[in-house]
Image 1 (spheres, rainbow, N blue to C red):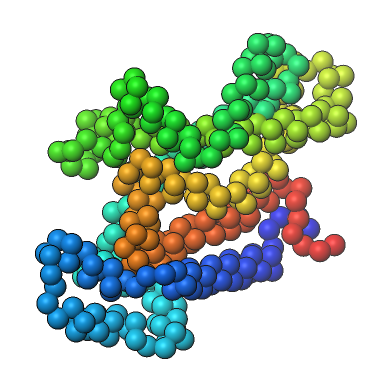
Image 2 (image 1 turned 180 degrees about the vertical axis):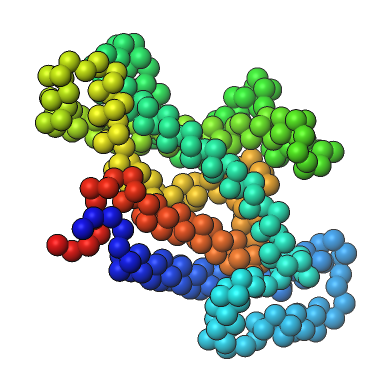
Length: 336
């Protein structure tokens, strides 16, 4: 019996819950192992702006009591896990009393938008280039150009972002240095706003696409070469099918399946790389929020934003894993 079974779906959902719990536990522990105190950092920022903060020690103790930082670690952990279950991310320590949900709600759409566009672009471009590299009918100069373009794969995303900023923002002044849209504009369903978003988002998207499409190109080329020797390819050639029809109908459709599987396992890496790119461009996404929260030692914002990113990554992997039998009906998740 092929296809998706209830037993497999339940097992995968159990693994999903275990993954989210373990990752959430790690992001609870790591900020507390780092040097610095969130309340002291807040008092220091107040001192820099005001010059002096009266009764700072009482303020520190009052805030620690308010946020439960004086409680034992296991009490803080239990309260933290309970909040995640109810999707209560708490309030920001650095921007009290702003709820973390509000901070995440402002930044998350920008990160999801950038990630979605980048993912579609580099997955499509990478697999297209990989298929063309292995196809015998592809012109020689096109193969050389595709191979040369993969040099960007060896460059870290943050370095690629800095190079693009230097070339297209600093030297040629084609795109802006930072931001997500022009100042003075309000988010709205207007052509002016979307044009500004595309203008400001081009370099961040390119920074992600350029350093990732090469991996998919190499993987797709390897799978295409493997598929080329299969019996159904020989049969198709014997039937006299046109080369292009054989390419997309027989080779690409079968070679793309492992690429989809690989995509599910690399989403976490993709998200991590995008966070650094967003920070480099001061993009209004989760990356900038996380970087600022780390500088401010803001435990709740670090935990809340990281949890949302973990949840998105784990959910994406789960969905791709569950729909895989629909992509290839030959696959079964049931033991023979």
